[in-house]
Image (cartoon, rainbow, N blue to C red; front, side, top):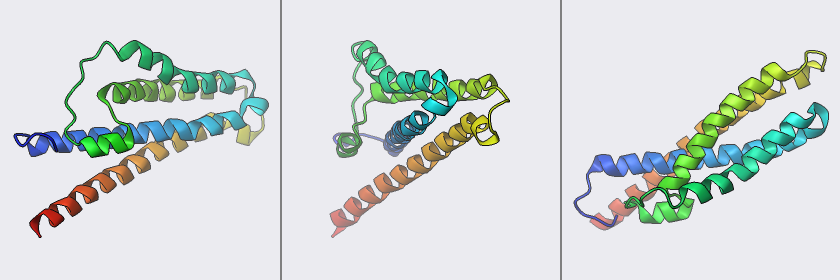
Length: 157
């Protein structure tokens, strides 16, 4: 923590942002191999989604890196550990919203002539993506909290 005049609310807000960023990032990374497995049986749509989720952070990162002003990071060691910046958080949030919309739209695009398990692939991928995001966000939030609680207990000794 770099600045002493920082409120507890600001620290908790940054803790939530770091954990939210990690959940979004790992959810997208989890989605990539799942989409890769469905490229052959389900045609070109998973290939387009795979390419979008693979290349969109690079393209958006180049566009937004110079646009946003750098916000001061309060939890520097955690931000460095999880590679968090405010720009990366906004990129992952945009990609996450688009991921939900594209996976939901893909569910309506699949012809019903496919086998039952292939027909449910987009919905199951969407559910797994959201579940992965929620679980990773909670785990990272807990890890950051426990890390700083250990530091506070060491400070008192």
